[in-house]
Image 1 (cartoon, rainbow, N blue to C red):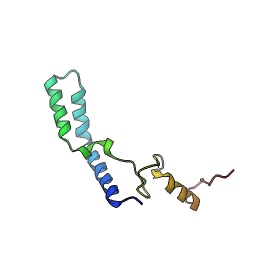
Image 2: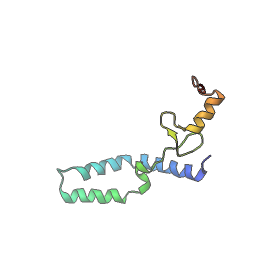
Image 3: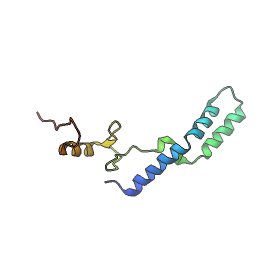
Image 4: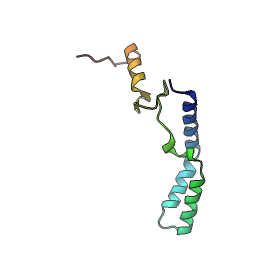
Length: 101
């Protein structure tokens, strides 16, 4: 089980990224538009830099929904390999059986 503070910090980042998503995309569009004047693009970059760092989607870490583990994460299942194996061994994932050869 991951530390509760780490999981909560990541959830806070997820909420902030969602909250500032529209503002961030609008500023990025202005900053990368070659048709706009240089001063306007530079001002958009400054406003983008003034946004909270944790509002950037790249700072959100994929974590297991079951344990909070940050590594060995399956995106499709939203859980780590360890939690997946544990649930599969208990028979709680339909159609998944432990392999043997």
